[in-house]
Image (cartoon, rainbow, N blue to C red):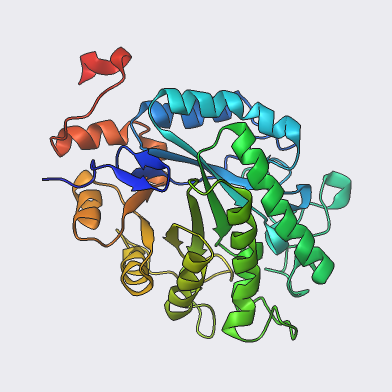
Length: 353
């Protein structure tokens, strides 16, 4: 019997299946506001049967964006604008989630199809911030080193972003702590060269992430699920590794995080990552077993049998699809047919069942 289509309760919500749409930047916002693209993009995946739809990295402040075209949730106008999207996702019996993010030193850069590297101030760019004044790559902006006031401001921005996410109708929050963005920059010794209590030891480098998690957990209702996406490894010798991720996951669990979304990489340029089908699943399996927390598996998951095997063998509690669900928004409906799962199709599509 397949496990992919079994429900999963996390605090006050129940996912109808273990299939989640991974947060994927669309670079299609204006002043942080969603457009019709977002409604169709996210809505079609809800129609397609995914149990959880996590909206792309959504900046908690203007300088927290990756590009000028990034989604944002730093003001009330933005929160109101997402209601149409969340209402539609809920109408399809799916859970709308949002990934709260801050790009740190990888901000003020071009959308992929517009260019590469730094967007200068005269073109709409901004001063980036980071734990240490070290740029990500030669063509990226040099960040300003954050002081304690900056740190507290960003922690507060995440809390305010969480408040607005609830107003916007989201039922789940994921904290972006991966891919070389601000929180990951604090975690990794490759980017955190600080000598104060936010740098140096593993405990110190984890402090910022834990304080953000606590701030958000204290802001949202007790029955509201909280996820965190981490980069389980920098794939660089001397960088952040899986052992560090296990320890961080324990700390985040204690701070009130319910599930670790196990990605990797992103904090060093030109790294050779041994990609392949399910290449990050060993991370989700180890973190699940050693930290005692729910995990999400991601990375080149393409077939229903593969996804079901991951859940059935307890390598992860959910699978997050990215490129595959861009190619096919209706992948969950297809997977249900392959695995002979009896699920409810949208009435408008039943003739294709």
